[in-house]
Length: 501
Image 1 (spheres, rainbow, N blue to C red):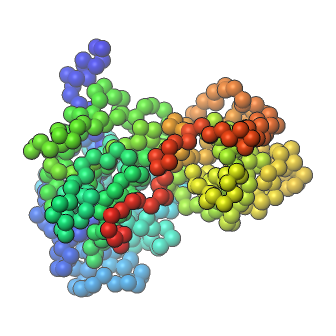
Image 2 (spheres, rainbow, N blue to C red):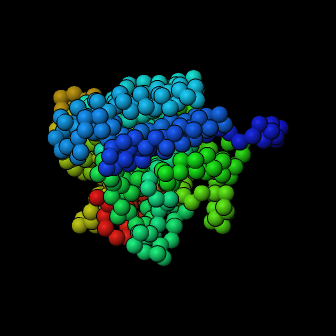
């Protein structure tokens, strides 16, 4: 109680805020001139947030747009080499512009350029995380952009909406602002439908019905649909995501104050360390009527998942590009939900070509309904290659040495190398460990004693018994939700109107 009183005297806890700005928000679409009036307001807003104690990161597009202006090129070229050259020209001028504007308010900034390869490599991912957090501790505002000078299609994020979501998840931000050319999401296109209604709060993004037909600008690569995908990704990591108008960035301060005042008091702060410990500070929602107060700018707020997937498990899901697919049966899936490792006996089939320690999709096959489409529920890092898994699938662990001539591990994938999409792990937080008896555990993780954890042979017998129980008695696997409630990052968003281009 005394701690709560002391916390209330200190005021609300400062928040981690990521602000994503698209090319069209900071560069004129026709003349390619920087929009100095908006850039100045963004700088003032970021500095105001910093003075209020918040940790601010800007994810800024615009390098190619500024490069077009510098070289007097009218249209965005299609050839990759020309785009990369323009990005190299524009990036230094863009950072010079940011530095000049922030310098007027004596605010230091830093440049962070990332590609998907930087995220896919675990050590580089952690180095980026530590560097950004160190900059924030120093009072610096990092400005993040994709390294378009080096990135090719295979290693690109595709758009900075996705990059901003990954960045927000990486540093455990509280808020992600996706700035766009409209105030918020609408159920219909407000430009052609006067009766379009704003969508102010989205609690379940999987059931969202909104118009996302607005495409990105001629300079940018995004659109409203990419922002929905980014919101899905960020909220799964516990980040409240906000869509609001870029032409009035001062709204960010008011929205932050509103959300800060409405969150639960006394929540513990989040760190950017690579740990699964600690609870998520919940940002509480309030009634729609309170959102309509004049002091609160119109915006769409996506509430975070109550059971976020973070750090190593977020990295496995969204930092790596899957190279193949493992198909498992429902009994195996139920065992994985109960914190078991993935044994060969639970693998039904293999698809694609992959090597050891590469990411693969996990899809569940229902043996009782052979014609049913397999459902992707998560990702994992495998201990064996696709060729090896093809030879040992459906077999007992004791048979591995005879089939392969060696046995690197009893498990096709350790439990700490398996992560499920938000909504696919029974409502619990994805903090798995390898069962007792495997002899493998991550540094800093505690392997608890639990009923059913034992030798690999015991695990196999339990898997077979549970699978038979499911098939014979038709039991529902634990963690399954009602149809329509399961959330998956790769699912398509329900839309009204044309699909985002």
